[in-house]
Image 1: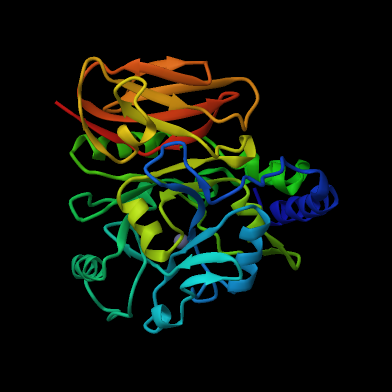
Image 2: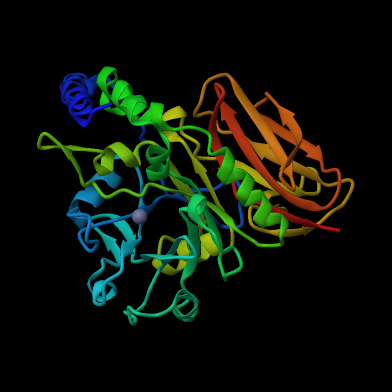
Length: 373
Ligand SMILES: [Zn+2]
């Protein structure tokens, strides 16, 4: 198809999108910074991850624009991953700005994919090899995340603490131009982006494979938000339009740069597609039946397998009917229910993780628990 025809469709689409904008999508205003039902004195923070601002060569987004978009959606934390230029770390926002916590970070290419690392303390030399850069990022105490995982060719490097299970930009790269054009032509902006979200089956399988190799990898979803696409002078994919689709829930005792980073490093995360329902209050734990929350292992924990212990899953009420809970052991489904909760013994040791589907779509993905023999 000619580019000219596609441009005409995009132009028509733009009009449709603008006209219909106020009517698109579901609202998303899930509250952040609440005590988590998983206990241990942890609070649930909602974070957007893999966000680019004006420090990246391909974005002009301001810190104020990002903070305003996050605040409007009840998101309390922004994890920046800017393309690196020396001086970026010194210039990056750090700490609470306009009510939102910012963690400075970088996205650097290597091994075919990306390393998304945060928080960083200081600038580093630009010309380092990928291996030397991983050493430097680790020296600074950064959480290294495997990003753009569909492009990674060399899986031997490390250390990594988390896995970008979902990447919105990759979704668009994989879709056909015609498919995007037609949906854009006939859907309001929010509904257009919602219709772009599919189950990242290949990434989930790769994550399970790496977990089976003994890696400990927390789940994160990346917005890859740049706010840099303009069609006929109108910005498409604003921070607010992308942030409302999904968020990462990070459990931490306080909302500081260090505590949020530690929450991700410890695997105390889950992410949710918020346009399908507010997932605040999701809980997964393992231990003696009836034991108080503080006495049970939670997401990211090691725990000894006991035949009488139960895995308990609590699905929040932020979504109406049509919910399915799926428990996977070493990447293979082993328990499933359409009830809003689950309390069941586990068949043996393994790496366990939980997915919740809503109306046939992926709603919540939890980080693993590591149940030992
Ligand atoms: Zn990026």
